[in-house]
Length: 281
Image (cartoon, rainbow, N blue to C red):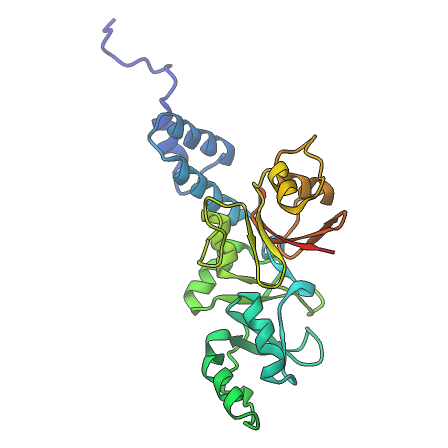
């Protein structure tokens, strides 16, 4: 018997199995993830790349209802309101797109882009009597059912060059909204901008007397900053405490109250809270 001949009964290497499971029609999702994790352990795949792959797989199995901003927490503009009334709210929100509504949130007139108000804002201050014309500002709204898969919506966003979708429930009412950034954050994690907290800080005070707090902020540091006495017996971080108090993983826009402090979820993914707005009540 030739010892140089391969043993046909020898188990395939992890690389061979990975190649098999990367076939266009993989049969076992969990084994695929196991093989990818082995690749990370063998330093053939970067941990950040692995997390992104996990995010892509998660997105393919999630629906828009899983990450949408609920209708009650949408920042909207009423079509009958004057610029002097809604522009301050737009500036304070930090968002770039806003549904414009009629009498109720189910009556969507279109989408307003904050950048389109730059010139209008100055003109209103200089010429208060100027008639405000919505027709030149409203963009068409994009509607999708709440059961739509996130990967399919991301593809539509790209094809239609859209950045926001209004979510419609089974009765035809508006259930909430979702943006392209919401989906991308499920894949790559939190996308920060110039308004976010710096990497070396856990807490940032806002001009409106609210505070942005990273969910990873240690409870003892939080207590020292706010003069509070939140328990760190079961959890080390403020995000863990808020999740425990809520009894579930809170969604973006959800509010949890602990004692005299109100915690509004600003950013989250399908695994953990990332950023919280804190207000003293």
